[in-house]
Amino acid sequence: MADQAELIARVREKCAGDQGLDAALMYGSFAAGEADEHSDIEFWLFFTPRRRSEVEPAVWCADIAPISHGLVNEFGTYVVFFPGLVRGEFHFVTTEEIATVADWPARGAAVERMVVVDRRGALTPVLAALPGRFPTPVGTEVCDRFVNWLVLAHHLTARGEFLRAWDALGHVQRHLVWMVRLAENATQHWLTPSRRAEAELSAEAVRELRAATAEATPESLARALRAASGLGRRCWTALADRHGAALPAALFAELDAALGQG
Image: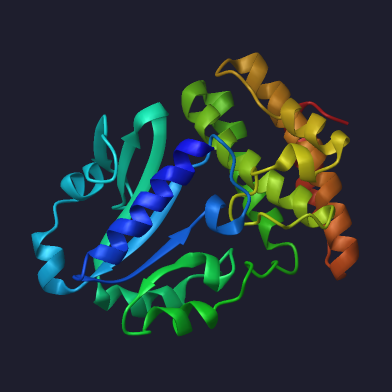
């Protein structure tokens, strides 16, 4: 983790020295105190509009350490690869974006660990007003989303679109992990539910989640869908009992018949 610690120190130094940078924050594993040698370094950089027009992200990042490649990901974030394949995520924005931080669902870390620069004091109060953690959903809404993807994956498998079914199964699995977290009261990493799942979920749940993975073949997909359906129903039942919600018994019966269960 020495590489990331040195990079973070260099980012902090560069932020402090860039007078056109009004505010900056660090987020992710290092801000939360959960990082290891495989963790990214992640920052939001709020420049004055004039300074932002002058900044070339690749040049700005290369001044921290040599980069082997840089790219803009699907979320508009600038991603670079530093030596040792350390990933860096940098949001290059203007001071106008500080207000949008108020729309984040949660901080995920203490304010003092996140704030790197706040020259006008505009960023700190916005961060402080956010909840520390994402509020845990109440009810069975995540179960509805799970079964929506499960039925779609079943039909795609039956149609012979195995790669598309495999893709849909990924959504099934993500919602299934959320359901397990709710059922086991292990919601520490809600926004990224698979994070530290092996450490935070029961050994039985981890085993069943692994059984719900598949290759893009009809046999493997069918097996995974049966496993997902079984674990999902157990979690759904536990959550329905907890919240006094009704179970979709007719849907369960049709799924059993379609997936060859029961």
